[in-house]
Length: 324
Image (cartoon, rainbow, N blue to C red; front, side, top):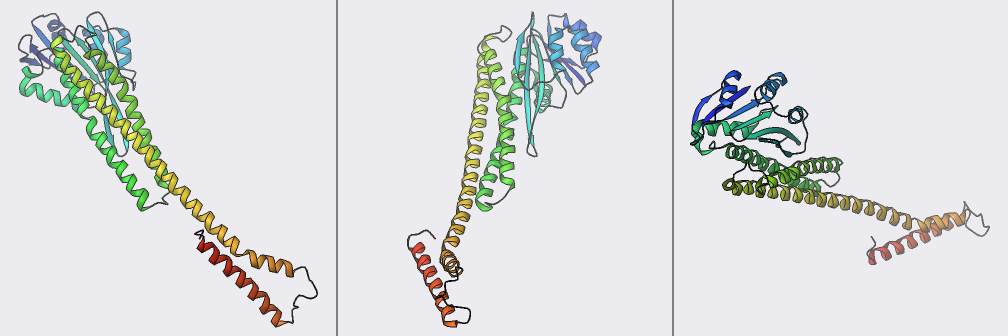
């Protein structure tokens, strides 16, 4: 769906919306207005018609739009910036990244995304309710979209935090669960992917916040620095989540090792307690003539007595030393 919004240049007041492509070409030449075109959930042919036919963006930038990547970036062309950022959603234990491409000009903003994005919908609602607060210039409108986009990271981080807490409880309650290791490694992979998405965006927003591009006006720089602070916090939380999962994994492995050690300890004690019987029966198997024969009941009682006494002595010795 192609949406368009035309604003007054000075006040940011919404003048018109959803213009035809021919009318967009005319409006593009009008210095007295600014506008936002959102290409969301439309076909590739429709998007190319706008990006190539109306705005005539650089072919490499258009190619990047149709070749999704998990890495954010910003590139400067003659009269506009091309910005690639990512929104995230976390559902059913899976992190999904949705790319948002933005062309930021002096009097226009063009956004392209393949899936429905909450940040874009929230900005549209804000524009329809009170356009002057967010649409005085493309850099301010861009900030509004990015601000909503980063807010969506909070639910994902909270959900990951809850899952980490559940894993910690599972380890203590059900220490022999075979699924814990798989769950920890899966969640750790999702956290690592979140870090790989957040870090490039942090670098990209830093370039905007540090006045590297003239399209971002000086009085808007504090707002973009606030976006940078949000990304720093997101990166820190993702780093903390990774460290917590490393700790959970280490605890799980330690518990498993303790269980293995306990099994080995039991088997060792059992083998030790069996040593007297093993020695005596082995010795008896040598068929020494003076050893009790099969018809000598007293001899058999004597053999079992020696076996039980030596086994009992070993048992109490192990208990006293704390080895059992």
